[in-house]
Length: 364
Image (cartoon, rainbow, N blue to C red):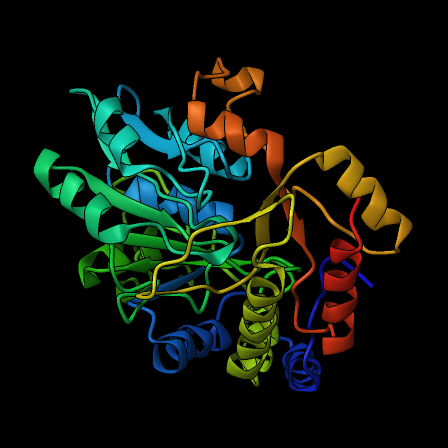
C-alpha cells in the first residue's frame, strides 16, 4: 500500500504522443484547450495554466500588485511554497493561527493580524477541506483586502455549493505529480475578474501580451513590456497530460470521498482518535484524510508494523529561519502534537481502506 498515487490515464499517454509527434511542444493550442476544459468540465473561473502551483501563487500576488512593504496573512499549516511565494514578490508573510479542529486558518486570528500594511489573506484548504470562505471574504471586504486561496489540495471541493476556484478574487491550484489531477508538474490561477486573467496571461510569459502582439516583418513580435513578467507558462506536453487525466476525474474524486466518509463512520468513537470537524455545506476533496491521534509516535510505529503508511505530510512552516519564526500560535501547537494522515487516494481498494481501519481499532 502506498500513501500517495500518481494517476496517468491512457488518454494522457495518447495525447502526449500526438503532441510530441506534432513538434509543437511549448505553450500553444493544447494549453488553451486545457484551460477551456478546466472551465467547462470543473467550473473554474477564468483559469490561467502555469508551470506549477507555486508559480500560480506568485502570479496571483503579482497581478494583485503586492510587493515590498506589504504584508500577507497566511497559515503556518501548509507547504513552504505558500510562504515563499509571498517572499518572492518582496512582501512579508504574517502567520495566523489555525483551528486545530479543522487544520484550516482561524478567521478570528486573521482579524487580529491585520495592520495598515496588510494587502491580502491566503487561506489554505488543508487536505482539501474548504476554509470558512464566507467569513474570510467578509473580513477581507471590511478591511479592503484581497483573498488568494491556496487550493493546492482542494480541486473538486465545494463551499456552499460553489466550486473552489469560483469564490474569491484568486484561487491557485497545483497539478503536481501526486495531486488529484496531474500534468506532471503544473498548476493554474483562477481569477474572479476577466481583466485579472488577461493580465495574468501576459505576466506568465515575461509580461508580453501575446494575444495583441503580432510578429512584425522581421519575424519578432511587436510589443512593449510595461511591468515585470515571469516564465510561468504551461507547455503543451503538460497540458496534454492534464487533458487526458481529466477523463474520469469526477469518478476518482468520488472514490476518494467515499473512502473519506468510510473512515469517518468507522473511526467515530475510537479511543485515542479525534476526527476533524466538517460542516454540511462544504464538500471535502480528500487529498488527505487528517485526524488527531494520542500517543502519535506509538501510533506511527504500530501502523508501520502493520505495513500501513501514515504521515503528517507537512508541518508548520513558520519554524524555518527564512520566515524569522516560529510564531506563538496556540491552535497550531495542538495540531503539531497530534495530527496524522491516512492513505485515501483513488488507487486503493475498499479492502485496503478496511485494513487501515482494523489496524487502528486493534490499538497501539
